[in-house]
Every structure is written in C-alpha cells, then in structure tokens.
Image 1: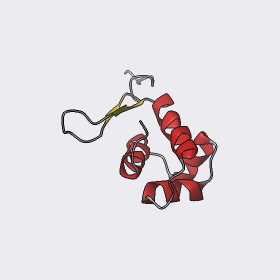
Image 2: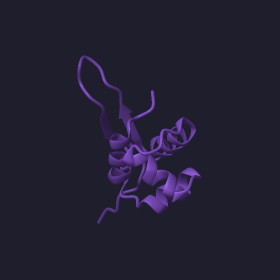
Image 3: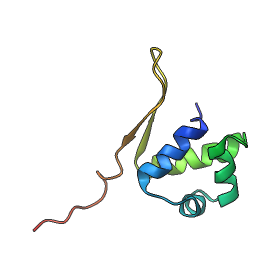
Image 4: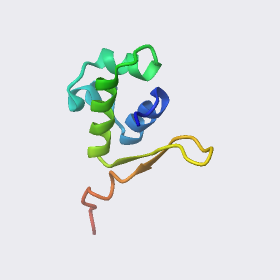
Length: 85
C-alpha cells in the first residue's frame, strides 16, 4: 500500500531531509517530490521509489488498521553509531 502525500512528507521530515536530498536519494526530481507531497501528482512508480527510499533509511510505515490512520516509526537512529564518552 502506498502512503498518502502527507505521510510521505512526514517521513521525509522525520529523516531530516530536504526535498532535493530526498529526490537525489530516490532517483527522482525535486519537482516530482513537491507534486507528490502536495497531492498534485498521483504517480504510483515515483511514490513507490520514494517510500522505498525512506524505508531503506529506517522509516517504518504503519498502515491503517482498525479505523486508525497511518503512522511512522523512526528506526533510522538504530542503525547509526552513537558517540560515547
């Protein structure tokens, strides 16, 4: 299931990415991301590329269930090394 525009935007922001950075990572244009996030564009292939890119960076998309809406889990920090003093 492909995440809706507002969830794709929230995933990008959760990762701290600018649109241009997300576009580069997903292999699509920044304008395509703008249009996907605004709901102006319904491009299944581009949405899948973007969602997959975010999942590879540690975002878990929680699909709607039991009348609840979409959710996001940030696992991106689990794969990053932490500094210890």
